[in-house]
View 1 (cartoon, helix red, strand yellow):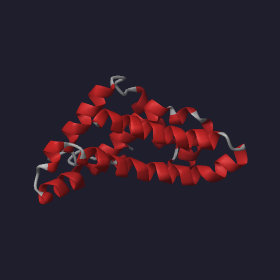
View 2: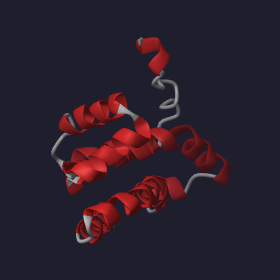
View 3: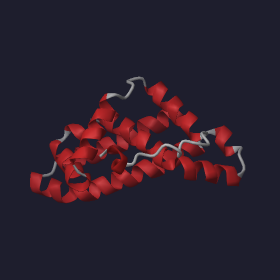
Amino acid sequence: MQIRWIFHNCLNINQIIEISSNNPTKLRLKLATNNLMNIQTYFYSSIISFIKINQKFSSLSKSDRLQLIERNIHNLSGLNQLFIYDQTHFLNDQIEQSLILNQYGQLYLDNLLKSIDKMPSDRKIIKLFLIILTFSTCSDIVQFNINECK
């Protein structure tokens, strides 16, 4: 079930890329912002779907489930984002790269590309890490602060 979930996410992103790439460049640029926002929203909603299909997670109390989601959603969706970008080759497209550059800046794009490059190629490792991170009670302790890096 969870392997199908990962495959399904990549298929959805690939469909967005394919539909977009069939349009003329000017229209692609116009649609790209909307596509990026849809994809960003998709990272969060799809990770919630991934969590919900885990039987152990479902067996927790509602309060515990909500706490884990609140603590871990940003890190989970971030890892999910890297994985899907890697699997779909989303950032191989210059228009998508330029959109992320315009939306989030060069530092974000560079860090995103470096992180994707360092991703393990084995899907099972990513899936296991997502599951472990789901049940972590302290993944929110480490949060990136760009001001500390200057």
